[in-house]
Length: 283
Image (cartoon, rainbow, N blue to C red):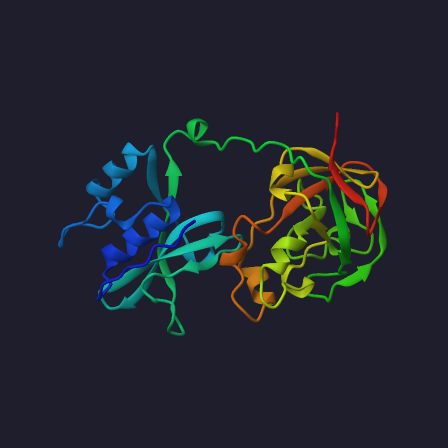
């Protein structure tokens, strides 16, 4: 996403919605249709324009509890007859862009929402990224016994196929999210991402198991790879959410979108050590 600001006041319902659309679609504000006063913001004009892009809008039922591992548009009530649009993101979701400042006041609530969806999902599926060419290294290993518990640094750990790292919440089933499902055994994040924050993003904020250096984790999605001699499989991006934001004393959700690391499965039992190489499987 590329945040689009509005350089005129007051910011209306229509202009806040246009800014959110432009942000999610990475367009300029001028490319989004102007909705005349008195016309429904989410109406035929907007829907036909989106249709020309192969997209549409799907209304969200229960926006206050809705979760989506990507951006969606939420509506925030700011007066008896006034509402403004914000960009939401994550499972569970939090605000990542608020062009009108509607959430600056305590007590705000989402009253509606829309997901921008592809009209034909087959045509919209993203192309797979090429395999990373570099070999990475494990800089640190972290395990925590349950959700919210402080993470403990270890120099080596037993990796249990289908479960996770010994002593970690993903094995015990005491994490925030269900264990023993695809992509729930192992989480990784790049040291380069952590170092892009000032101060550096700590394990108490990112809550990942392995901190790597020198390899593009996003390119491991859908691929088998080795951590030392332990065979793993990248399942999906580890996108940020309001849970991880809750661990931090500063805004981190937006900055981690598409940079939050990798969720992986452990395919075979093994031992993972600090200093182990992270490399793509050759088979």
